[in-house]
Image (tube, rainbow, N blue to C red; front, side, top):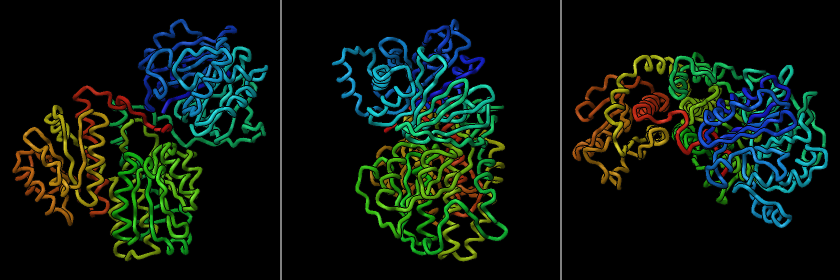
Amino acid sequence: MCGIVGCVGLEDSKNYLIGGLKVLEYRGYDSAGIAMIADDEVHVRKAVGMVAELEKMCHDFPRKGSVGIAHTRWATHGGVTQDNAHPHMDAAGNIAVVHNGIVENHNALRTLLEREGIKFKTQTDTEVIAHLVSKFYEDDLAEAVRLALREIRGTFGIAVISKKEPNVLVAARMGSPLVLGVGKDCLLLASDAAPILPYTQQAIYLNNGELLKATPQGYEFFSLDRTSITPKIEELDQQLESIELGQFPHYMLKEIYDQPTSLENTLRGRLKAEAGDVHLGGPGLSLKTIHALNRVIIVGCGTSFHAGLCAKYLFEEFLRIPCEVEYASELRYRNPIVRPKSDLAIFISQSGETADTLAALRELQRKGCRTLGIVNVVNSSIAREVDSGIYTHAGMEIGVASTKAFTAQVAALTLFALYLGRSRDFSSFVLQEMTESLAKIPTLIEDYLVDTTQIEDIAEEVRNARNLLYLGRGYQYPVALEGALKMKEISYIHAEGYPAAEMKHGPIALVDENMPVVAIATRDRTYEKVVSNMQEIKARNGKIIAVTTEGNTDIEKLAWRTIYVPHTIEPIQPLLTSIPLQLLAYYVAVKNGRNVDKPRNLAKSVTVE
């Protein structure tokens, strides 16, 4: 959620820190702050609102400092106020701390510190860390941070500086990601790689329980029991262009148009369409394991959950394997039944850091379940902790409302189903048809995106709606859920996705002449049933927006507006039908003046519960 940046030995510290916060704005936040040591003082500025507001307050801020840290906050403990914004200071004003995560025992620690005479200035849990570090400080900032963290229960990614050691930056991780960029003459800290890309491609990802001490002379890594660690420097595979808008007004639109490329990257080297075959190195499952597989459990949140629902139909229809799709936030607090020898749990997360998904992963691993990850971010927590995995290779996704990550997840799950099918019950004909059809998807999307004026026109007509209903059956039901989620996320219009047949069991009561209903009615085995549902809506004066297959002009007799998508086989149709729904949500939001890339109250990566 929140964003951290830090630097040591940089010529233009202020611009890196402010610029880094701007790059991390996509993570979601409500306030921002900066601290830098210059002229033997800790200079601090904090602001509520956008990073631009903080930047205005920094016109007289030192350009260069020995070390610096900055932060964007998404409020958890304490309201959205300037005082509650990070960085937080100790009572003497010597130590500054920025923190992602939650200190679960902060109330108990606050009480103890108050008994020792400490007066708190904020409502946050993070201020506890600053006072603890000060309490343990004896001329060694790294040791003081280490001792303070031993008192804390919860999750954290923190960065700490002190004017008593003006050339030292200390950072530590337990659950909330941090990466150190190793430049030629500087060291750069960030919550993810995006801020450091303009400076270096060399990076070290902190592992859980690791503490970093960075100085102009270099860096040292320790465990929280002070054992020395030799870190591994990795070459970043992300490109600077991935965080630049180019010709697009918003990242969300850019990422919608990225999908032909992102899907090609997901499929590249894995899909052998001409041979009707799939090669995946990541899963690493033996034939014995594949044949013993009796159940798949797919776990995710939000958009990732919807991608999992698409896969459920594939696994059950073609592999004849029972498949359950679970919200991670619910699974982690149940006592799920796991059969270690025959179950496989798949965990889906764009960031690889989603707190609920990570907790569910650990719970199922504790029960002995084999685990596989579908993630986009290399070296993320889920990628590191699963038994095996598949990277989606969708590229960096900046827009909070996920688009290309969704289609990449669906494609990766489809590849995995085909991978299993090679050793189970897939006929060679089905495998050939699936691989050939999947290979054509990037080109079909590219051609579709040439002209989207029809979607813009429909968006103009529905922008003032107060509610929308999205309907689908079979493989299109998850698409209806995802389409409704996109509309809610960025336009702030209430929208609900339903199985089309379930409309009669309640939601049809909402249908009238003011209710746009998006009905996904592609030419598949459920087409006639969806048409029947559309007739029920039309009889009640509902405004039907039909999403159907090219050439199906008959549906215009029922629909108020019709959106055509290219034809493909039913199991991979969601890769096409999801595109116009992403565009519809985007254009409605733009026409209503919404902050498309940074919708209110939302964060890109939900790293706290």
